[in-house]
Length: 98
Image (cartoon, rainbow, N blue to C red):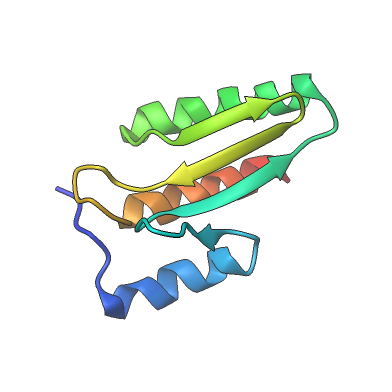
């Protein structure tokens, strides 16, 4: 089972994500980022690629798509906060957006 990140593990896992544009969500133990693409097709294609990884890892994002932007929030509901799965999926999202 996944565990909520401890104070000791947060820095090493989250700091690299903050450097790529991820931010803490006010009022929640969650991280968020807005991804912007050239058009709707690229945004939707990225979401489809992410969805395959999310399903494989059984860890699903909260997200919202309007035209060429996708707003993402990651948190692990089972632990009521950020887990290593959130960091893993965030890294995958970043790599798929390159």
